[in-house]
Length: 226
Image (cartoon, rainbow, N blue to C red):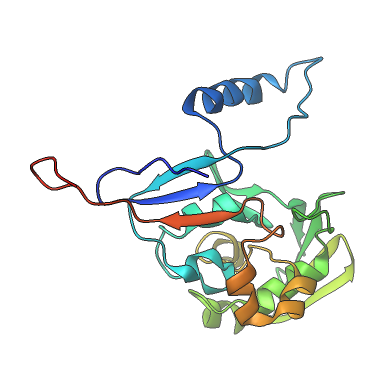
């Protein structure tokens, strides 16, 4: 595979799901048109995409469980993972893996319903157990604050996950879904199989939507030299 160098001093991220800029624009146009009657979307990703990043990527940014308290790692999370609920343009709490959620009248229980048929990249289903597991292993920004207020997380069936709070907390969704990486989901069976260290080393396998290779382009001098 070849990598297109990023801008000066930037880091290049190469994936096996890449396209030229013209192809990306064409796909974007098709994506907008896909909602029109009679249109269908069945193309599979292929090839390579070179992505110029303005900072050096930290390995911890590839694991939602270690999300720090800065916004930069989310550009990696949005590219490689998905969340129960996440911020999207025009909607700070947009449903993603969850199709809906509700809160009890006493504000002590939040229940999420997963979309039907969602899978990880290898075809394994995303279940409530994965959501529960991902929350319990979360150790990033605001982890202590969030977990101190959660009494229990329950997965009564594969599509329903329930958070029980110790007391009403109006900011639960804000901290769970927007101010931390706690709502981002990883595959429980795979992480338990390879272990925490193995997940960091093998995370970019077929459990992720793309395979990633990081390259640091050569820096240019002020006189145009290499």
